[in-house]
Amino acid sequence: MINDSRYAQNATVYIPIVLTECNRGQSDPDFEISVSNVQLDNMSKSSIRNAAFEKLSEIEWSGSTAVDPEIKSEFSKLISDSSKSQRVNDMAMKLFQSANYQSIQM
Image (cartoon, rainbow, N blue to C red; front, top):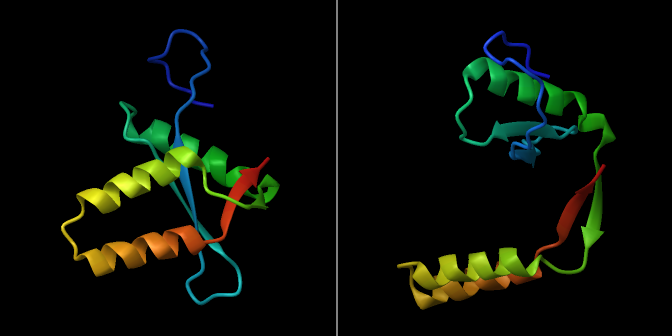
């Protein structure tokens, strides 16, 4: 994927990305791809984004009945540490718990 003379041999590395699907009032969704803030140069990050964009047509979202327990735990910690009023924190948790969750199937 990355053609750079600085790398002497091929290797498989897993680099997390964040795929955000947005609908900004258009009929077709828009996607943003963020590459993890790792020690990669801009050319490498661009190659990763381009490869991810090429795979967008293969992505299928599937509904889920519940949020992952680890994600719920982290969100709860953020709410607990928040300096917002209890009313705001309660509403944030209520919205979080009532959301429709989806995951990617490739």
